Length: 254
Image 1 (cartoon, one colour):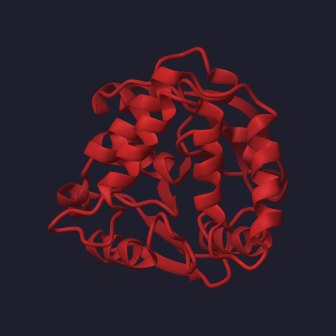
Image 2: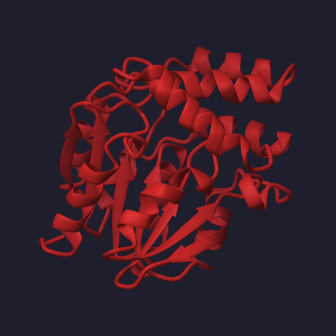
């Protein structure tokens, strides 16, 4: 994991993106966060300005990589949340608190986790990657904004930000899909030892609010839902999202 930008002063807030994305997506939003936090924007291995590095499938190794980042609050979006949660469970003394943004401990639906995504969706993405990487990412971006009021406008913003950075490498994209398909941290949730804030988008089609609420209850975290948001609430509801995080970690009791 590589810090590609740092801004602001205050408590450390490490922000990590999801599958196929990069830290550039958070540039505008992080300016708001930087009014209260020292914000470190992180590119996952194989993504963004870190696109030449391989993405490991070993959860212990991924936690070791995360431990090289300065200790602080971690905000993980989508797959980044799953990896941040893994880090929190394995090395709780190296994280102050966890913010799960449109992220869950288990991405795919299972018998004990019915609110996940159908595994066939990931299998289709894996097949599409072999044909056209950029088009596959564009399809994923469309899912992130599906159902929101200004779908086309948000999709345009996401595409611009994502494609202003190098495309993720093929290995990292394939490994990321494998992680999303295989990782299941639900049984470990009850062992989470640090404060956690779980934020969902009411119109999210990739990570359902019901899944996030259930996860928050298991680990005694705090749950909030942004009613007008899909999978990328930092695009149109950045101010509300910032105020929520500030209220909990600057003015609140988390």
